[in-house]
Length: 118
Image 1: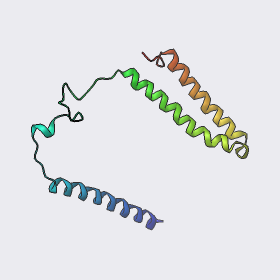
Image 2 (image 1 turned 90 degrees about the vertical axis):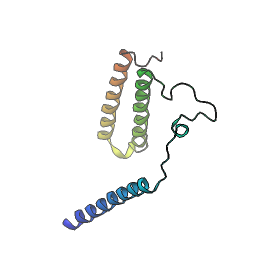
Image 3 (image 1 turned 60 degrees about the horizontal axis):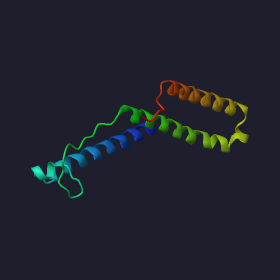
Image 4 (image 1 turned 180 degrees about the vertical axis):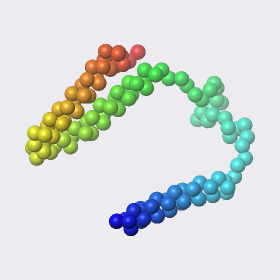
């Protein structure tokens, strides 16, 4: 049993060492000549204007998170729906609880007006 953990620790250590050596060598061997042109924002060959950072409203971020949650829900429910006959009533009950929690979250988001676009 100790040998299995030792092997895993050796592989983990070798991976971390390889990563550290690769990053260190790339930092030491790369050419580094910063100038104004290299540090400016690239805009498809046109003269840059303004800042590269643009502020977004938090509502877009929250809307994207809600979409992501329900997109991942579909990923979880598809295998469940395919194997429903073989899983039995316990799996059906678990999926029902999962859907109820997600529906509660959807109602909460709706009441907080997160789903309104503008």
